[in-house]
Length: 290
Image 1 (spheres, rainbow, N blue to C red):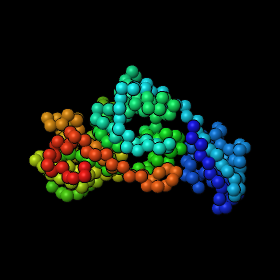
Image 2: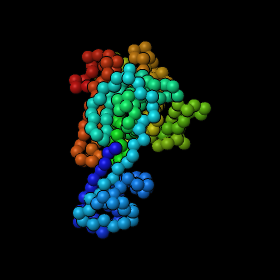
Image 3: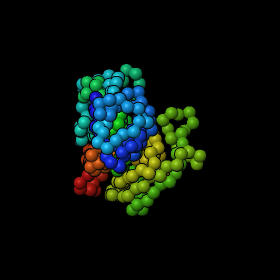
Image 4: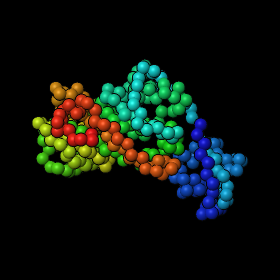
């Protein structure tokens, strides 16, 4: 159980406890409601959220962790690129879901997480990737870090699209909706959710284009649907019109991640190198440093 300790500064002298947590430490309304059940003390004694705090008061906050209910799998191994007491970032391989797809399945990132921490920490993925998307995938280790990290993580994806995209950079602004009768498939849909993808060309070779991609929105299969919609599906993405003769999965990789640490505020920057199957598509055209 992680305990967070704060000292009230003169700026918040006389403020309600809930306002001190909200404005000084970015606690959301949902977190404050959870804390009303307990898990807090001021100078060692319980206080109500509406009670005032004074300069120099010591506020302790803690969240009980119910632990992970997923089946631990000791046979899995996933590289870890960053870890501290508040979060962990994996370099997820292809053919691994973030969550188990069904009861009895134990080959997901969550099952490895359960094994790594002996079920003592709840699995709280902050960023999710499709089963065959590789790269950086973050999980928070406590309720507070999860809440503070959501919406603060900047990600860059690398993708190999089929065909030669002529523009050096551009954006794709096409709404996305569900395909009727499917819980998986998505499609361009004028009545769907707003979706905006920005891209930059890094290399072209043979019949493929290497792209750097940033998402302005986070729709399911957004990158895959958008590039299929402009006639350049991702290599290997048979679900959306790509071909799997050269790569057996869609060529998409979360390569870079940057975020302010939820408590220190220090910027964390991480990089996961391009996997071998995507490098093979590019050959000598693959830029250095990837």
